[in-house]
Image (cartoon, rainbow over all chains, first blue to last red; front, side, top):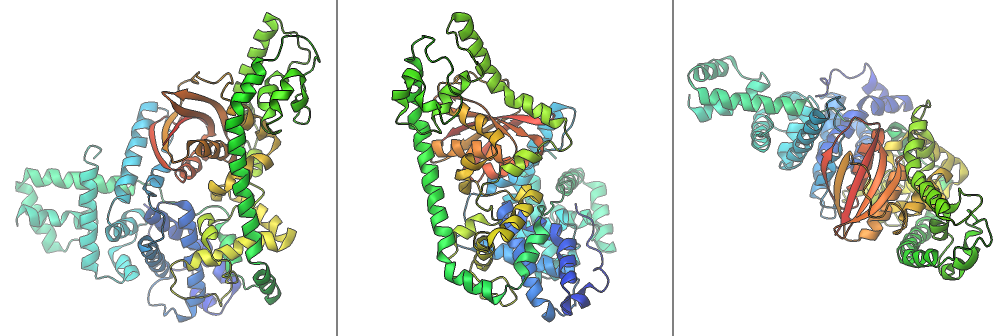
Length: 184
Length: 402
């Protein structure tokens, strides 16, 4: 799980609003992995995730003047990324059958080949199980258990009631537990 | 508190997000219910598994690409792009398509003829040196007439194995040496891989060379789909409508930059590419790779394509990774796989037919394995049957079928 979001870099929002080019570069540098990460987990394709992640930052670039600052920049970006991902998943012309792409990650290398194979199997099953979750549950699960956001941050990013976040997360985890019974 | 009510709190318990009263009630129930304790343990293990997933990292060069896309474009360039908009992509796309189709036909229909020609070559010393180069290969001795229908690309596949032998005596020992040379040739990639790994940057050369001459755009599929007219949106004035694919449209203009804006932009794009092996070009667009790839890639890519080569029907050593690839077009997918392997710094090591299905054997650097599999999934449905991950270069056997 990624470490907690933490506070925005000092003065970054103000510099962004002032149109400082360096500030935008800093924004992208600081949050690129988080934005790309959630897009990849949601879409399953690196090319598509990069496309969406770029779009997230371009939208932020255009809209930062209107950003009220009542949430942290990171939460705001997660919100934009989440909406773009859900829109993309709902898009009728989106290519289908991307589910296998999430199986592609390499397991960690270990000296024990059997353990490595087992880890690879678990890894593939885990990613496939996450990819098989309904999108709204998957999003909450990814934001909480992979990206490390708190309930409150998820609620802010997705504009949801915290109770809804908790409930979706619970259902997502139960569903995963069933699918991963033999590993857990 | 019932079991159902208790279990509804498990997830929040995992996040330490229960109110004190809820926690107390939960603990009280768990103390007397072994089944709920078991359920809780299972759920906590699942949460732990998910949290153990490594966070993803954006590909190298991502920041630069975003900054480039956000940079307002000078009006002059915008005008030029509008005027040129339909032309940079269409001819290149069409050329790539024809090239891929042509190569596929030549390679796979030409092989039996090549095989026949090689067999009919009489064992006379004749013109002793069989030219190893493409320029001279088609005119080598009696086999030449059978090769006239083949391109220079296909010719060396049969001729090349003899190249290491400077003087050819078609005696039995000589033939066995030839066979040995052929065998070495198949094994050479692995040796080269080992040598490369001893250097400071083992994979930089093949990776640098591997991307095709055409720019490997970050968003290949969308670019192909982008309407030619929508090409100017890189600045703050970019269209903000709610069309389904605004990003694809906008980024397509960024990709066209590299073709339309001259050497400066191309050089920059190349630099980005070198920094960013993970954002490799799309498999589908890589049909031109063999013709422009690094010279070091040419031989291993071409030679093993022969259906009559020494690797035919002879499985390599047990592969580290065995994969199944289901595609509509086996021949095209086979080519794409080979190109993909080359692009990630690997190479083809063999090819065989197993139960009527094509098995492509590849050596893939472990560092690039993730990229390899990701891009392979774009070719069709991939299933990976076994993996062992200790070696720096993985032997990957992909069974391609439809």
